[in-house]
Image (spheres, rainbow, N blue to C red):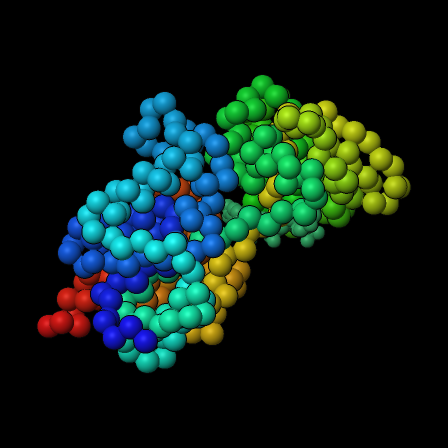
Length: 311
Ligand code: NDP
């Protein structure tokens, strides 16, 4: 075991983790950040980011995360390309196991492990990801203005994405696998009020079509078994997200949807000195800028917590 005790251990390297690192480093806390399995997080699988303030011309997602990392390191964050594979939050200082190999100790932890969009699991969906296939209408809808798109799913996310896209796109198909929506009544109403949204019931996707970019989808009606091809330029998957909480689930309170529960208005979890920021604690907004905002909050919360420990 490493006998030194870190002030702040940051787990995760998306906007929340790096922003927490920038603030913690500038506060002189010498944070240690473990990047995890997908350094840079979900933004590394997007292309243009046009809605992050401060980039008037937009920025490529992977480049933005390189910039975040450099900024965090400039102020003294130690960044490790490794994974936290276990934690022990039942004794203080807390412990984290790195790559199943060695253990570090820390006075506080900022969890910024993010969430992963659920995908249908089709090879064509994976091949065309970022080339017309997306899991974020707020991020990518603008690229399909005036065009025809589909949204897979029937929950609140799908309804919200379809509604958002209907203001930008010519036609929006909602591909719903059952004969009803899971979405709340108000979101269902919103979708039904949009003349350019068409819901295709009992519809499952067999293949996303296209070579270089999406050109359509082949769908099957699971009742009639009728197959048809719909011409499309954009294909949005909105079948839910999976917050990355597996390491912490036995210690931390989670919301009914499985996100880390924080005290409203703070990033504090149910364990003192353990904070959560970004998509791992946010089922609603899920934007880079909101993740960065809560990352900042987590660093400030950690700084205050450490001040009480030292006094
Ligand atoms: P949900 O789990 O609520 O809905 C997922 C939807 O995707 C369901 O319609 C489901 O179908 C469908 N689905 C799941 N897997 C597949 C698949 N393999 N193929 C086709 N369809 C599939 O997830 P959401 O992300 O929509 O919402 C998560 C939570 O966040 C909810 O509690 C929601 O209320 C909340 N939320 C609230 C918002 C708001 O209030 N503005 C906005 C977004 C989310 P089926 O119904 O058949 O299972």
